Each structure stands twice: as C-alpha cells, then as structure tokens.
Amino acid sequence: MELVLGRWLHILAGVMWIGLLYYFNFVQGQALAAARADGTNAGITKHIAPRALLFFRWAAVATWVLGAWYLMRDPRLGFINAFTLRGAAAPIGIGAWLGTVMLFNVWVLIWPNQKKVLGLVQADDATKAKAARVAFLASRTNTMLSIPMLFFMVASAHGLPRF
Image (cartoon, rainbow, N blue to C red; front, side):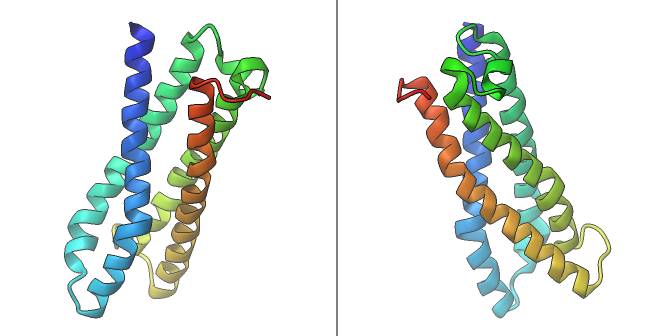
C-alpha cells in the first residue's frame, strides 16, 4: 500500500509540474505577449505568474523526491539501478535522469531568471532581457525533455522493451 500511495503522489505532483510547464509554454507566453501589446499584462505578471511559478517549482521538487523515494522502496527497480541504467530499471532510469535535468533547469535557470523578469528582484532592462531569454530557453528545453521523460516513465510501468 505504501508503494501505491507513493507512486500516486509522484504521479499527481508530476501532473502538476508538467501541466504548469505546458501552461507556461503553450498558454501564458502567447497571452502575455498579447497582454503587453494592450497594456493589461500586470494581472499576469503580478498575480498569476508568481503563484504559478510557486506551484511549478515545488511540484518539480515533490515529483523528484517522491520518484526517488519510490525507486528506493521498489525492490524490482532500486534507486542505484535506475540511475546507473541497469537491468529492468534502465527505462525508468532514463526518465529519472531526464527529470533530474529538468529539476535543475527549474531551480538553477528558470526560477532565478523569472524573478528578474517579473521584478521580484532588482534588475535593469538589459539584465531582464537576458534573463527572459535564459528562462525561455530552459523552459522550452524542459518541454522537449518532458516528452521522452514521460515515455520512459510509462515504458517502465507497462513492460515496453527494456534495454
């Protein structure tokens, strides 16, 4: 029962994380550009984006921690086997590595730069422009990495070919 609950919490946190990632990349980016054009972007940048980023970054942590916990507890897989891509844990290990890179991007590239863009920390216009580009590229990278990450997570659970 413990493994089932842990796995479900991992999945729920992952749905929130990846759902918000897709929201930022497919909805908010275009909406913010339109809102800037007509001068109505303050609602997004002051209220929606900071709150969405709060849930986004902590859902990333929860997903990774719960996934690591699950790997440590599942006798079929194992944390070390997953991260060294051994045996039956290899597919989920690839997904775990992709998730680890994505978590790094969230906390090291996206969040520190979004704080500058949103005015949560002081930055001049040139710094904000550079920060926006870095956050954009890291977010788009995470969007692309999410596709194989999800594939390998599902492949592990549903008996798709192992390496």
